Amino acid sequence: MTKDHKIRVIIADDHAILRAGLKQILAETDDIVVVAEAQNAAEAIKQGCMPNADVLLLDIALPDRSGMDALKYIKHENSHIAVLMLSMYKEDQYAVRALKSGAAGYLSKQSASSELVNAIRAVAKGKKYITPEVAEILANQVGMENEKALHETLSDREFQTLTMIASGFSVGEIADKLALSVKTVSMYRTRMLEKMQLRHNADLTHYAIKNNLVD
Image 1 (cartoon, rainbow, N blue to C red):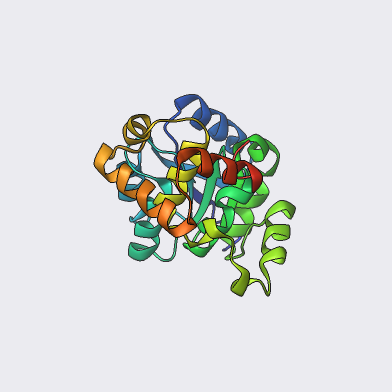
Image 2: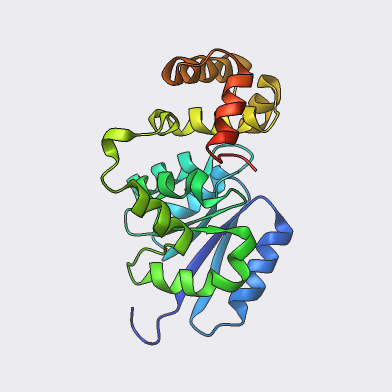
C-alpha cells in the first residue's frame, strides 16, 4: 500500500441508513474512500468480483442470499479482496465460520463505529482483524478438534437454520428470510436433527440456549 494510495472500500448492506452511517465514519479519514455500495448479495458479488476495491464490508444477513455464501463465491473469484464481515450476530455464532471461509475479519455492528477504521486499515495490509472475543473463541478451540461441539458439524446453512429456529422463527418464516423453499429449510432441519441426535425443535432450542448460540 503506497503512501498516496487510498484504501478503496465497498459497503454491502441492505439498510441504507447503516450504509450512510458507515460512509460518514469513513469520510472523516484521509486514507479511505468508498468506491461502491451494494444492497443485496447479488450486487455484493458483482462489485466484489471486480478488481476496483481493496476491502469489502459484507453484511451476513442479506435479503436474497446469505453473506456467508457470497463471501465464499467472492473469495473464489477474487482472492485479492479483503472481506470484513459485518453482523448483528454475536462473535461466537459466526466469526470463526467466517474466518474459515476466507474472511479477513469479523466486526459486530454494535462496535463498528469505534473499530471500523482500524479494522479496514488492518485487513487492507493483508492482516486479519480479530477482536479479543474472537481471539478467545479461537484459543478455546486449540487442541479441541477431536472434541467438536455438535453444532460445529453443521453446514453454514444448517447452522443458520438452527439459530433461527431457536430464535422462534417457523420453517415458513425462515424460508422467506433466506429466500429458500419451505422444502429446502425442512431438509436442513431434518439434517440438523440427525447430525445432533435430537428429535424436536424444542431440543434444538434448548441446545442453542445452553451453548449460548442465541441471545
